[in-house]
Image (cartoon, rainbow, N blue to C red; front, top):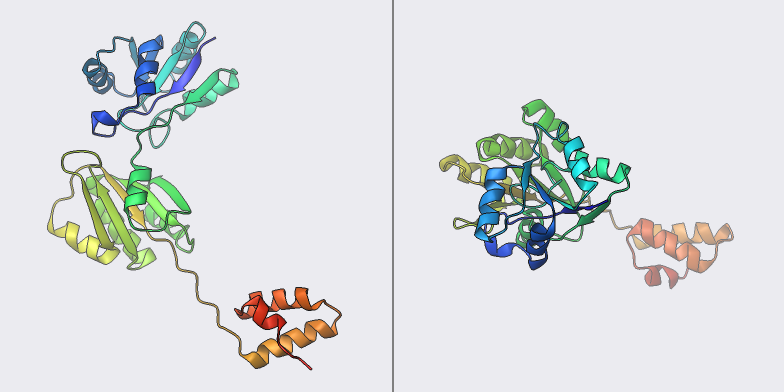
Length: 272
């Protein structure tokens, strides 16, 4: 039984393909490609002659059995037109079917628009939510945005250029004028990283026709500031806990969290 390799391919600049990806594409028995014409050009550039078969959104279920049969006798590489298969691209069903048959699935690291857009956005990167493509219809799109509008995580999503303005309007209406970075045509000749607020983005892209592949990175919600207690309130809360038999260390920690005070400052208060 062969291995199923998940092989990322360049999102624009062909120099971004890894040496390991090239080796795997040369060594497997079959490449399952989202578009054989697009992948054929990539293979021709690197003089790779591995057999191709199509595997895309419209045939992904009917092609499962032939590809799984190919895995009975050799390795198969799964690729999409650009980036990592399975991320807003075909791949999930094939990967699931392979795992159910105990076929070894081997993911290769490589190109994706998500991480470059995120790290260059200037927005927090320690935690983020990837939303893929939002629904195409306005009511469903607004519901999807409302579901995350209170989350404090940076939001990352893809959008087609012809739907960019509609999406920006809905983001602005639901989220308000948050900061946004629009990463356009990453790694390509016309690469652009536009930064500003959602209202500024809507105005800017209304004046010029949006073009190219778009990755949107939007700031998360800012948690509401907690009111800081007065010293009188802190003393009273600490005294109450101590009177109930709680240790000073435990009481100080609990009160500090509620009051917005440093724990040591609460611990050192004289409550009589």
